[in-house]
Length: 333
Image (cartoon, helix red, strand yellow):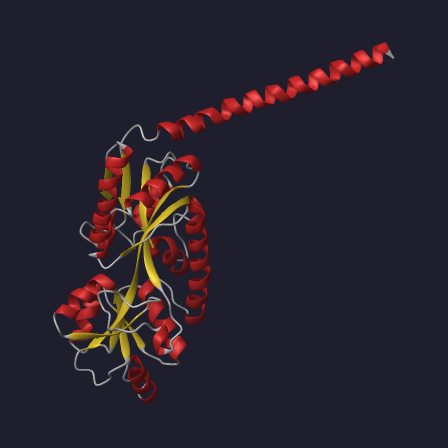
């Protein structure tokens, strides 16, 4: 019995020693991660924009970068890497070192619609760690100022009676998806006419080459100032402050509530503590009065969310739009 007790005691001590050794090893492994997050950042951060300078996504990135520079104590630089539907910029960040020093000011286009519309991409949704939304904006339906239709209801009625006489302009396949969603919800057959950019798509409406377009808010507001087009509806759930007299699609009985977005993402594998640190700073920045004023001036609504919420939103949008693209057989050229 004494021998058994001695062996039992030795076994207990051995297990305790093994457990303590594992704790020490785990601590040694985790310490660098916590230390990196606590010290972050120790050098400049780059926010990559997949569009040319001057666009809404670029300006949005620069507003956020300016404020993050002050709050993080390190320079936050905006680097433009435009090309091929923003695939160039997104791919660059997806392959970057996951340390929090290279971020992407992503958007619905490269993160959601590209995965729906392109058969092959050099990156996947799993290559990113979503950080936070930064802003959202709906689309505006524009038609000629002298169009006899005074409402979407009247336009739909005309389209059903004259299916061969109605069409729409779209600057990319992602905008085409929204228009085809409208066709599906209203039982119309507006024909797609592709254009190279938002400006060309709007010009086609002005010159009556097409019946209407569904276009992003910024260019739409600029075009409306010229008086050659009129706004029929917005795709958001609520009316826009800039267009208080323009109804939402849902108000008109069309089940469409869609907004495009911009948001920050990091390469997959970025330490969660660093992702959280950046997300908290972004949320704080977006609450600053001057930031709100500057972003709303771009016809964008500033909004933040958590990494988990952002990730879930992206997944849901990809699944929803893939269904529309499949039903309408829409693919990127």
